[in-house]
Image 1 (cartoon, rainbow, N blue to C red):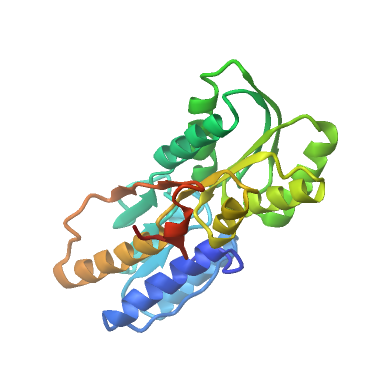
Image 2: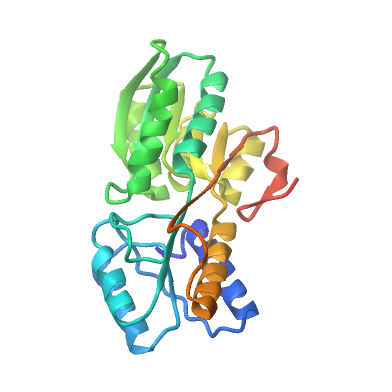
Amino acid sequence: MTPSHSNPFFKTEADAASAKAKELGYEVKTASHDDDPTKQAELFDSAIADKAAAIICDNAGADVTVEAVQKAKDAGIPTFLIDREINKEGVAISQIVANNYQGAKAIAEAWVEAMGEKGKYAELLGKETDTNAGVRSAAFHEVIDQYDTFEMVAVQTANWEQTQGYEKTETILQSNPDITGIICGNDTMAVGAAEACAAAGRSDIKIIGVDGSDEAAALIKEGKMTGTALQQCALIAEMAVEQADKYLKEGSTGLPEKQLVDCLAITADNVDNLKAFVYKE
């Protein structure tokens, strides 16, 4: 279970997990909850009714997901969470997430350098119910706020969406034509921001995102984005399936519940090594 597959990040998760599970001999069902807690609860109920061996989930909210995971646990079905944590330990078997803080800091450092360590900028925030939105923003600011030569003139929530990223950036540019940078909580919003900047004749604006999508990689190659932090979502999804398999066979993963997988800062220097959320030297 993941958010919408219209976002290539979540489709990659589903495809990678499905391929690995089939390779290990499992029958796989994939579904999207579209970040709707009610729909997610229904999907968990369906999985329980199907007597699923295990559930892999990129969840629809840190608080609202706890009850569904507990319900599955009570039914004897282990849940392995990827990409997003929940606000309780001991109900899921594994919570495997990208090291968002480390990744956002790394790409913020590249952005600061590209900006010449000064300038006015705007920020596009992700969905407020997602803990990653706050973590990434805090990491960006830990780097940027060390410099009194930067001024954030606008901050908008664009809910991880490209269309909202475009629309919010369009509005920001009208009010703040002198900005030279935009920091975005994910690549989908960053792509929208880059499109809006290009439409306004402002492809000079330094834009960063987080995810490591092919769309962002293409814009980095064109010079329309400064960089992104690659979350190794295919690797994380495969790890979750492998841990589920081990847990089902041995009764333990042998690993702590919470696991962090480091991100990679992607810029024009190394973007050619990135494809489909996989980095190869």
